[in-house]
Length: 223
Image 1 (cartoon, one colour):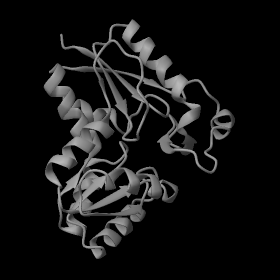
Image 2 (cartoon, helix red, strand yellow):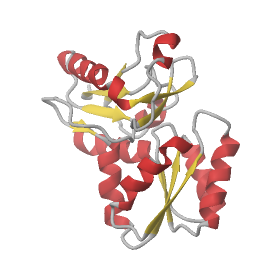
Image 3 (spheres, rainbow, N blue to C red):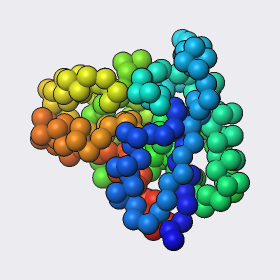
Image 4 (tube, one colour):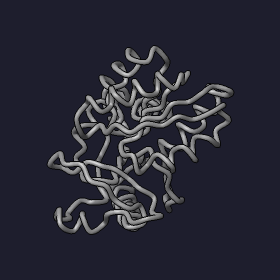
C-alpha cells in the first residue's frame, strides 16, 4: 500500500478537475481530499466575496461553478481540513491552490504549490521576461507583485479562467505572446495539461503548470 496524503482545496471537494490528473503522476500515493468550502451552501459562499484590498482567490465548487472569495474568510476552514486529514492518518498535506498563504499548523510535511513554483521559477527564469496567466483580472496586481520578486527581468500578466470559456485562456496566451514573454506560468491549480499544451502551441515558449510541479514533488517525497 502507498502512503496517504491529504489534498486540501480552497473550494469544494472532490476536485474531479484536478485530482485525477495529479494521481496519474504520483504512483501508489493515495490522495484523500478536503475542501475549505465543503458543507457550505452557495449563498453562504457568495458572502465570502472579496472587498477592496482583500487577497483574491478563485476556485471551483463541487457542482462545477466558479467562485471568487477573499482568502481571509477561509483560513480557519483550511486549518480545520488540515487537522482532520492528519488525524485520519495523512502523512503529508498538499494544498490544491497556487495562491499565497500564511503558515498553517501541521505536524506533517505541508506542500504549497506557490512555494514550489516560486523556487522553481527563481532557478530557471533569472533575467527572462515572465508571463503569467491568472484566472481573474482582479488578481493581476497581486500576481504581478509576487512574480516580480523572483529575479525575472519583467512580468506581464493576463486573465483567463480554467473554470470558464477556454477561448479566454487562448486570448490571454496571445496577449502574452504579443508582450514577448520568454516563459509562462499558468498560475492556478485548475489549469490542465491540455490547456498548457495549447498555450505552449500559441506562444512558442515553455509553460509551467502548478499541478504537475506539485505532483512531481509529492511523488519525490512520498512515492
